Every structure is written in structure tokens, then in C-alpha cells.
Amino acid sequence: MNSRALEACYVVLHMSLGPSRAEVKAGTRAIVEAGQPPFRITDDIWMERFDAETGRKVQAACSPAQYNIPDEGYDGHLYAFVRRVPSGEKTKYEGMSPLAGLIALSRLVHPTSTGGRYSARIFRYGDPNSPIEAVRFFGVSQDISLIDGRRDWLSVDDGKILLKLVPWLTVDMYQRIRRAYWNHETALRSYYLDVKWVFIVSAFEALMNTGDNKSRMQFVERVGQLSSQFGDSISEKELHDAYTLRSELAHAQKFLFQLANVLPEKEHVPLYYKLEKLLRKTLLTCLLDPKFGDNFKDVASVDRCWQVSFPTTRKKAQGRP
Image (cartoon, rainbow, N blue to C red; front, top):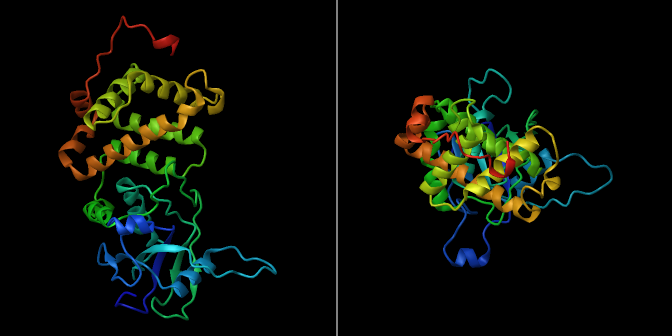
């Protein structure tokens, strides 16, 4: 436990199995492990692995009560995000916001399923008999839905990058970057690929659309330039298909499974994942490299850096709008 015990703390558990024996043997480890000192992020925020008893108690506080069904009492958490409750809280749970913000930033480094379902307030941190109160969130999904959950945990190297993002908890992002970041987080909090697709494409539009003129071409050409810059392989046809799918879904013309005529169903997830990864790389680079982030400062910056040809004679691809 942290040295400053018996203070109230907010905690968010990450429920995951963690690295396999083979991964550990190869040198890949979770950001913090049992018996290790906490991973310090700020003076008031850190990560640690609770002992099994504390982990079970937090899970019990956050789990719905059962009737006549015994609780197995299994500790399934890999690590916890912890924040000391600030003394000057004006509203209940106000101090959870920086903790939730940090977790969202961590998903730009590496996406994990840390959600809000196991969020709690420990009234006397370090006291095994302390009351524990579940923190209930409303208006957002409690869960994160990952397309690729093969490594559902933050590594030691991820922690080094996360520390560089801490200033963004208090520094304003450019509005274009903030809107794209919000769409990224909302996509991960959405279960259905139909919904995720709209938010991910909208995130790119938040970054790079500079007017109503030829929105499709702005998306195709500018995201194509991003793809080339980061060494990803997303073709012009794939970007046209992605935009067509987004338009059909956003206007509720069809469900995704009904759009195999645009893109075969087996290719939906791979293409979506390409876009999600590219968006994550772009946002992370914006926050780590201020010069790169300046390319999204305003309309003039976007137009100057990410030029679009706007051909007047080019035919619409395959009759698409």
C-alpha cells in the first residue's frame, strides 16, 4: 500500500489475466506486479497491484448483490489505478475525473479494457476494515470493447510513454485534436462495430475536414497521407469503402452486415482495425510531438499541411456519393 495510508482514495481496477509465462520469460512484464512498489504517475495518482483481499473487497463493492447465491470471492484484478481524494472536492466523485482522464490517455499508448465497472472509493486507504463505496457512472458505457484484446494490459514500456502524457490532464488540446480524441474513446466504449465505425471515421473528420466541399475527398486523400506518413498500408479504395460504410451507417440506411456489396463482411473488422490503429498513432503523436500537433491547430494549418487536389473532372468511384 501507499505510504500515506488511511486517506480516502479512488480506485479503478483493471480486470485481466496479464502476460503469459512465455511473455514474462521473454521479458515482457505488466506495468506493476504483486510485491512491487507502486508505479508513481503524479503526486496524487499511482498504479499498484492490490493484495488479493483488497482486490476482492473492491470487486464485491462494485458487483451487483445476489440472492441466495454465494460469492466465490475470486480476485481477478491485474492492477489498479489509484488517486488520493482531493480535500477540496466540491461535488461528489469530482476527483474521479483526472483518474478517468488518465485511463483514457493510456488507451492512446495501448488500448486496454479498463472501464468504469470496478470503480470505487476506499474511505480509509490502507485499513483492511475500511468501508468501500462503488462509484456509479451514468451517460457512458461502463465497459471498453476491444477489437484486438490479445494484450489487454499496460507494459513497463507503456508506462514510460504514459508519464509523458500526464501534462495533458491539465493542458488544453487543440479543439480538433480533442474532438478526435473524444471520438476515439467513444468508439472504444461502443460494442457494435456499426457504431464504432461511425465514430472512428468522424474522428478523422474532426482532425482533417476543413469545410463542406468534397468531404469524401478530404477524408480519402488526407487519411491516405497520414497512412503513408506512419508506414501503414491503407489503400485509396479501402478509404473510399470506409467512407461509404460510414455514410450508410450514419444515415441509418443499412446495418453493417447488409453492406457486403460495398466491402465483403470478412474484411469489415480488418479495415476498421487499420483505421483505429492509425487514429491512435496520430493522436499519440499529436500529444507527444507539439510540432506535429500544430498541423491540426486550425483550418489554415490543416489546409497547409494536408493538401487535397479537389479534382473537378474525376468521376466518383464506382458511383459512390
